[in-house]
Length: 581
Image (spheres, rainbow, N blue to C red):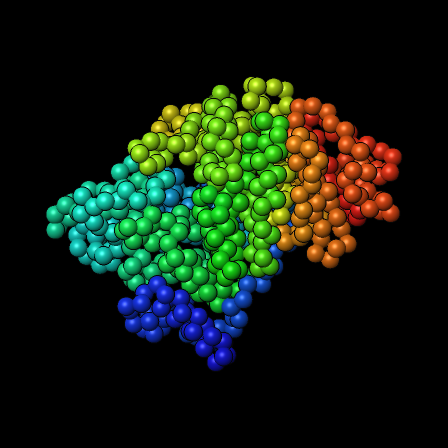
């Protein structure tokens, strides 16, 4: 690392720290962090993200044990499944928290430095990271109440005795924004008597005190470890809640944003092709704020997309989805949207606030309940509860419309994914959406957790047998999902930062135009989101008449001047002037 780069790095780190920790010895703290990341050594890194993502980037989301087989470490089984079934259509994999944990299916971490021995070991993680871009969770806001840090807190020992936030039990915390209904403060016995510890999510998930510089340094040590083990993409879990200041909502605090910028600086100078993704399940404008000025998160989850696509598909009306899409800013170069429909959690409703009217949110929740969904709630001002999340598999969410179940579940399911896969950004697909897993009610009953409805564990041999049978519904879904991705990865117009414009073809259609960065390829993505057949004159879509237009999905060529586009229920086309294969 040249002297100029070292000076630039130190200046940037000290600037971040001065904003966050104005009362600390900034020079000493910067030296400490640079030493932890080994950035005080002669490492030839320039500290600039290479923005190397392309239309070939697609991420699979999975737990380490979503697919299991007897006498095999689940991570080894996952590795085998990814290589044999998905390697030709995905570039990366998000393995949900694979550490020892005490609750919340991994998000209550006991030890950040170890792999859960029920899943495998670091050698399995490193094996997957050799051939796939590995996304790992940095569960940054909180840790398990069974962690060594919290045990030390209760025993007044280091590290840990000042790692957590305590306030008197009569403290007014009414302004604090909560995603849960449990009491904020956790009564805890310590050697100094009872203390009341801040716990945003659950009493097993105790919030870390980032006002203590030792907490920051411990988290940076963990980041360094993950980089060394092959992590390329860091998912900052629940990061919006990180900085606490009484008298404020304790969400999206300016110092939280600065911590993200600091971590980005440290990570980029250590590994310039690494990426930070913020997990901020919040109203749309708050979520967008984590891009900063292209100097904060490289990517944000497109959290408004799932509830708005769901609303469009079950109502057969793209009104709100289209209005939202037109309002979304293009991601600046060096950033991208991470698009998804289903995840290990449910379909969040907060990101739809201010976009969907409350009555539409209620209709959506009630419709999903009729399809077998569970609803998770959050506390709001006045002691009321509001629906926070719909817990259902995406396949079962596509059972029908507001009128009830119908025969179009498979077509509706694929159409919804065609929308997501084609939009500006990088698509992320949950393992259960690849194969159309249905609601897992036994998991809900066993765990007493609504989110377990979408966390089924497949037997490896059973799954492969199903996927190899042409008549099996899971095989049909799997092949159609893979076909979508096979088409996407060859088209420059699907680059995550390629141009996008919304089309106006009526509320029964959701359409948009993508154009490659080089401007040589256009793709018009036109989706019938109803159970009716719709005809559209091709002359109304503004296709250049001198070009030959082909539907990538079916291979059909069209006469722009004289033909109509006939779309059957939930049919979609990707009309392009240039086919890449």
